[in-house]
Length: 314
Image (tube, rainbow, N blue to C red; front, side):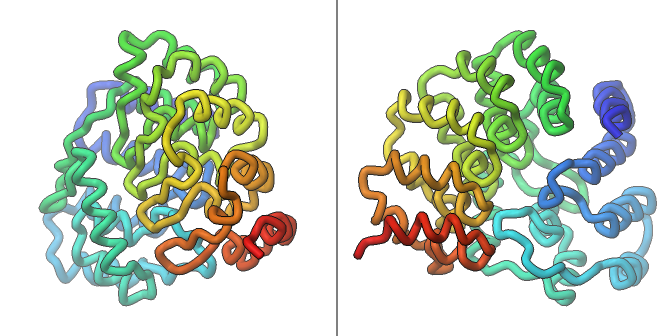
């Protein structure tokens, strides 16, 4: 599987047709290790169908969609990019309607924030079936992302350290708003992070947000092991970013919300130890009215729930 991913990255770097590039992007999307970020097979089948049959009538597209669109599975974590999010960002109105009819949901507020966040970052929204995003990320960032997601740590470090402009590379964002630090926080190892973070100047990329308003710290608190957090937390403290433990994403979730939802006990403890008003942080509600304690309980993380209860205001 790693070899297949490597071939895809190499083909994407070659001079090929637009169709080939889009095929490779779809294939890469299906191979992302984290299931929450991965294209569904039926979704990719529809994308391939539309790509190879651009002249099909609307009726044919609707019939194909009716056969392939599936209902959402239970308990999809909030924050994951669903087929509905992707249809909205690509302005695939017919698929958006079919997904809504199949039970996929998004509030008007979240839809507005999703589109606004995407446009504010300069990515735009696809128009007329074509990808018209203003691509601000380089091949270096794409190669780094592929290497770090697929476990090629040495390759990722090599791509980064051989960059012609490391400061510029650190500021770049891909189509989902991810910077290098986003990828490191979500997928990286402590060794790779240690080698790269020494190149991060004050404030660069630390508070950058993806299309869901999540900073690298949001992703780290949801997914990262303690050895990664032990590097990232002191670095945030050193940079003196204001209220970095309380920064809300597009759904009002703080890093503590994500740590509680993701079952990351180490992150929960570290966040509570760094916030000057831990009871206030614990009582903070997201846009749905949920505290971190609510999320810990609803996702079955009893140990985290016990820690959060101990820090609540009495």
